[in-house]
Length: 206
Ligand code: GRF
Image (cartoon, rainbow, N blue to C red):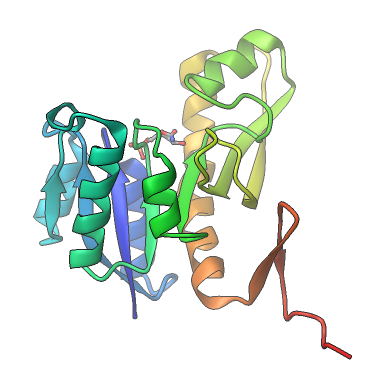
């Protein structure tokens, strides 16, 4: 059983979706720890109610991003974590963290990357006039929202959509996509070719 860590900063609905997938047997994994950089993240309550260990590491307590990253890595190591899942974690992570978990950190982003990286992706897509947006699960590298893409799902933008209505429809898809992407990363064969995540057995060497 693989140990996951879920890193959150807010409500934790993707955390909830991962918990449900485990409960329903769609994902064979164990959440070893939920970590938040904010003590008021409501997702922490969800974790505590389930008896999942939690840790709060307020980023302001650290003198640099590197020191914050090092504290995160130490916490993750103490829980023997194999795969780190960022789920609404609102801090960019640096090389110290990425190097400690190479191709073992996932993030979910509410757009079809590389379109609309960064904050407020649903609002930016709407304002841009995109007809289709969606959600992306990708590996995390130090460059924001730019690591190799694991899975994506498209969500059409409807006439009359507001940021709220569009975000809500994307979120439904996020909750389906993230547990499935975690399952594939844990259970399927895959490799990185260039910047592509290629699923399936590696070609035989001659
Ligand atoms: C989601 O929209 C996710 O794509 C983005 O932050 C939001 C987190 O929501 N990275 P929640 O905390 O999982 O409800």
